[in-house]
Length: 106
Image 1 (tube, rainbow, N blue to C red):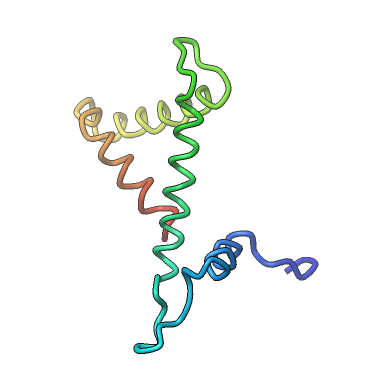
Image 2: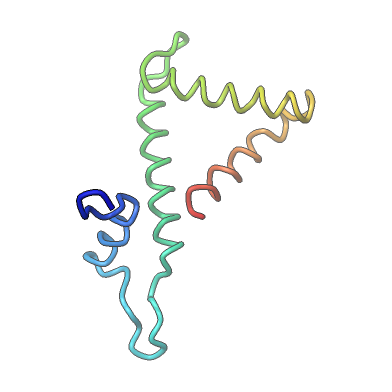
């Protein structure tokens, strides 16, 4: 690593260790909470906070963070409709929820 700094994603592990979520169980010598679960919680918290910030002041003409999310969601929806067809609009929320909840945690 450049300058000996730890990887920023691994700081989630360090924070979990300092809080006590990441320790060994005395009986099974296994982690109490798995690292994947901790990363999933981190991703969920980040998405929830960003969603709350983006929908705080909704307007017909988006600005700021709402504008960014409009572009991202609109682009994903058009991608799904181009590949699946017009019926893809029905399954878009499900596909988006599945991909958003599984991608950052893996």
